[in-house]
Length: 387
View 1 (cartoon, helix red, strand yellow):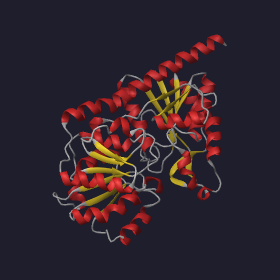
View 2 (tube, rainbow, N blue to C red):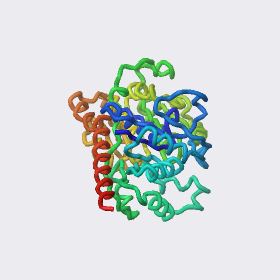
View 3 (spheres, one colour):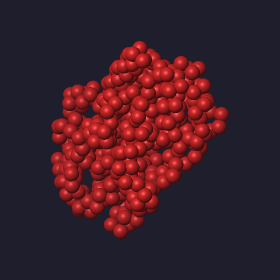
View 4 (cartoon, one colour):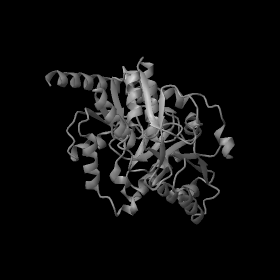
């Protein structure tokens, strides 16, 4: 198949969506399919740089998310490219510019279009005029307008599926959790991250890795740090990533006098993510807005246990304490972290890890998405015959 993926965010931008798309692209190409990325220009990509099967369209920083971009042109150019490469299916990954362009391309080429609904926008309304402009019913209306006339939608978790049903979405829907490139996460590190960050080899390390923003609830991890340090004074917390709340968290660190125990590592290139997970004893996430838990499964693929906020997605991943534990309150998070630190056994049994990695692999992810493509294409062709 010739597959067109339309997205407002793609490498070198660092985000869960960008990683998910790259993982899917690689998995589909490994099956022998041709994947073409239609995305935004990026200031970090030098003008004239040739990226195989990646087409970039003029863009500007997105309102309220200035580290993200949105295209402002490209309908006709994208259609021309799509005709030339003979797309069989359009797969949109955004509800904004490139998503609209993808829908237009599918309509012009008379091919099916499916969508992956990545973001629970109700959790992000505070970014727009502090939540005074948009309400949840606006999100419902917007979602239904975008998905109208689409041929299928992928929900990365049952939580997203339930939300879309609540919105009244009736097009074919399939729950397909995002997979992870296991080999990228568990290959032997090429860098000594602990040494680079000035962390002693005998210091326990907690890692949280994400966009540094309010919805990730990193402040809750910082709130329990004093109690953890009382029992484990050599412990260090590494906060990896960048975003709008870095300065806010640094101020919190100062208020709690945690400067000697918390390290802000900044943005981590995708190729180094596995090394960060592997250098940590525990991965911790207090975010309650995750739709696909990509960082959880990356940590697991790297062989690192996790303590994460409980969602319907975590039920399928952390069903054994040898893999990780979940929590629903700050006190539970503290309890689980201390429990692992006190036991001192951070190694995941290999047999259990191998079995779980089969379920979350990029190969499994690619197979499930490819099957959905085939089903949607068959339904689309059947409808055209009837028309």
